[in-house]
Amino acid sequence: MDIQITDHKRVSVVAVSGRIDGSTAGEFEAALTGVTDAGNNNIVLDMSDVDFVSSAGLRVLVNTRKSVNSGGGKIVLAEPSQQVVETLDIAGLDVLFEQFDDRETAIGTF
Amino acid sequence: MTDYSLTIEGRFDQVASLSDLVESMATEAGFSSRDQYALQLAVCEALENIIIHGYQGESTNLIEAYVNSDPGEFTIEIWDDAPPFNPSNNPAEIDWSQDDPPVGGLGLKIMHKVMDEISYERKGERNWLKMFKRHKTN
Picture (tube, rainbow over the protein chains, first blue to last red):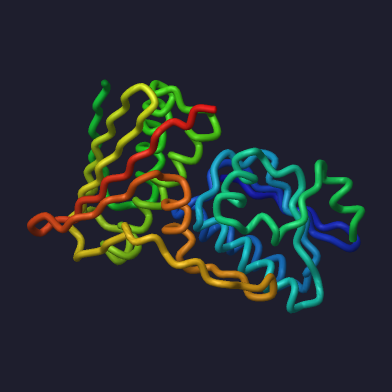
């Protein structure tokens, strides 16, 4: 799993790639907590290159959503891979996250 | 009919190796790419449950898996030496709001959503879990 964070004027873009499961969810959560701890509660999560995400990854998504919402912000997904869409759908959590076809459109919603 | 077995240590980084086996066996059984992914996901959840709830964290304790594929059918049997843990009961659906979505029990929910049958028995000092999925034809 690789994570790249880019801060824009009103939003932080977190691009994650690879496999998000029990072995990587801690690193994923630490990266997102670092963003929110810095006061950035508007997050675009680019998941276009995620090839697997388990419930361990979903828990990070849900916890981050709670954190940014309580800070008055939101987290949206940019170009989620088919695997991400599948996991969210199977878990019944797809309704929690706005999804956009590309990163620029997602950034433009903030 | 094809059978494979694989033994891994109860560590998260070992789970992906079984995932690869599941993918190839599901392909051989004729499952769609969507179902292949769902099967990998369900198996991953079962293994991570054993590591987290059974072995109480990562360890060198072993997990044995026996995978069987027939045309249109996929079966996996998983053995571990942890204290009794029965994941065969489908967790009850609970009402939740978007302000307070659930974070617990997601793994079990995924396993039961994906698989057609989940069986569990305590055999001696070991846990035996069997998960089965049949290919859906349209």
